[in-house]
Amino acid sequence: MKELQFFTEKVLSSPGERLFSEAFKEYQSYIESNKSKLPDTVVNIVKSDWYFNARDPRCPKDGWLIKQRIENEFSTTERQKKPAEYEITLLGAYHDCHLHFVYKSVVEIDAPGNAGSLLEKDYDPWRIDEFSRRDDGYLVHKIYFLSGKVWTIKCQSFEFGVTNL
Image (cartoon, rainbow, N blue to C red; front, side, top):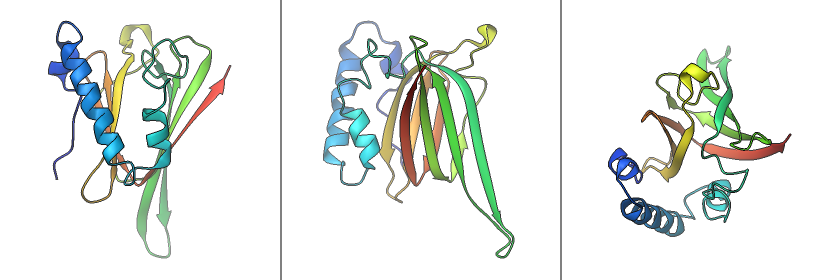
């Protein structure tokens, strides 16, 4: 099943704002026309005036990954693994809040390398991200890091929160 991708490396590495502005408009249009298929949490943050505003502390851009948590469940009666819960916590770019991305009923995580690490040698801040809904109903969250690494998380539902420090 084809997954949407608005912020390709071509868009993110092109000089000037033109390609990025076009991709951002297409992405906002996609969210607007698919808002009934997406979780309210996703629609609310993507359509907000702060989520993509790098001047706002709640914006994940330039955030540093400080914690990952994964919970796998196993049903002993059914002898099956149940979908996992995955959480990413970022230190906000202004170091005054934590951003919590919680994925429920995770079916796939593709998170190569040490992207987003707080370690100076692996410093790789969050660049931009995008959500989409696949034809099979799964929510897909793609996260683009400054190094060019891309993480992809597929899940049933998603929650977001901010904790001020």
